[in-house]
Image (cartoon, rainbow, N blue to C red; front, top):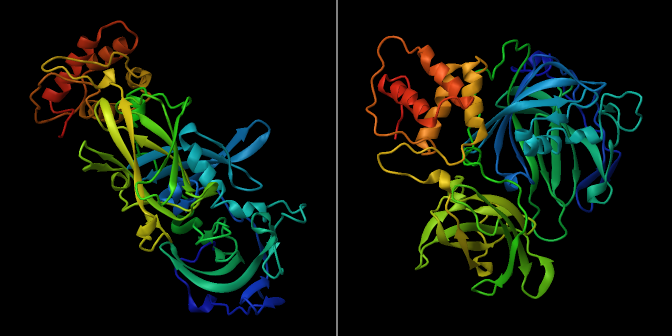
Length: 492
């Protein structure tokens, strides 16, 4: 059995820890090995039908804001001459649902191929859940990076922390939301105890808490995760009814290639630090993103970053009253950055005009402690927001975007061809109406009675509209019919 959901007392094994070298001065174990037979490598025991669900944060993904990642091994796929695991993936990131596929290596089950919408999550997967592949893979011919014995004094050196040793430290019975199991804890010391819990014959670690290496200050978390659920022999697709969130930037045809940054450098109002900023585009568009790159700098040294910064980005009115907090938008009290260098995308929710953005520093200090307000302060940046023609509304008239995002007509074409189902098509139309991208004249919403089947003429309309054979008004009339019949329901 790979993972013991219930730990039977008959299966409890008492392990003893064997230390071959211990630094008593710091209380830090520098060589280890535990008295357990066997070995482990990333992917050990992985099989078709395995289903995993993790809570995960990774330092380069939203400054370690937690996400939930689920993946299911459907089967095999071919990538040129290489056979990969075909992993179906769902990521829940705040209020977004991202669905796609990854191809995981057979020698080490880390992302080799992945859908474009999973790019950032694949990188986070590789540097957290699959991080141990740098030390332990299925390649038995590799004497350095092949399967690693639990009894070994060390599994290798970690170059990022000056050659520290990754060692088997101890055994521990661990309980996660997925169940209870006997685990071996491997880890290293870098000013903090970094630990990863692995279970023999289980493909991925079940828990981890590691910290970034810093020379001063309190180290931020590098990655942290916990196994929430695990199932074997899952035959039916567990994600068949999951729909990806339709991203607003797709609806509004926003440009996501940022260049020609506007730069500035200012001291905070309290002269606690200097804030260097870059943003793009020069004239952001309603409903689209601003790409921000922000550096928090020592006021006396223009090349020294200030770490452990609690900050936020606000929008304020002419009198300085806060209208919006980006941290609150994503459900946090503030934002935290461990290294003094920030890169984030901020969606524009304000109307066209001059918008007052504030980079507000609450203070500095450990992530989970009250920040030192003496290092607080702010700067204000005025940015001109351009009007987005896709958001223009005309009273009592039908208004479609002057440039309809291509995926809308693609959806209509795929639906007419039977490549997506009715529910998927309706959900897309519902979202477009609610977001005012597809604007419908005042239409009395009906109550569905009897069959919810969509008449064939509407599907024909969608096909003809996608092909450019009928105009927008004709397509809109079909959508109005679905609302009147209660087949499409629009809530405020």
